[in-house]
Length: 113
Image 1 (cartoon, one colour):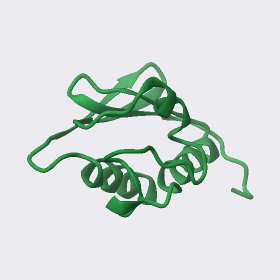
Image 2 (cartoon, rainbow, N blue to C red):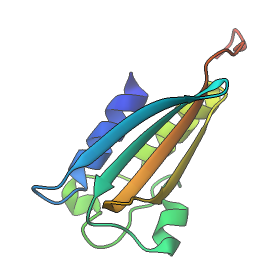
Image 3 (cartoon, rainbow, N blue to C red):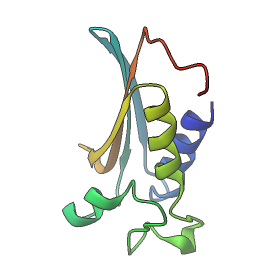
Image 4 (cartoon, one colour):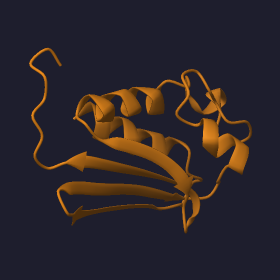
């Protein structure tokens, strides 16, 4: 639940007023693929590559003044990894950022997770 709450909150916080968030989910083989794609503002290629780093905040509209601490996506990355999945950031076709999560539909987790 924290994963989806963080992704939703992140997209809504950093999307311009009147913007949009598109959430899609589909099955791809044995994986569930969920995409959170928001509208402008976007980030540069350099910023995009660092979005999931702990304490990293992009300059401009996507910054701490908007309430971000630079931990949200890093936490999401760790949650997804603990469940045997992947998370990656990309440019959204709507002008913002797309966060794609892939989670295995069947996976034996270690008991200590």
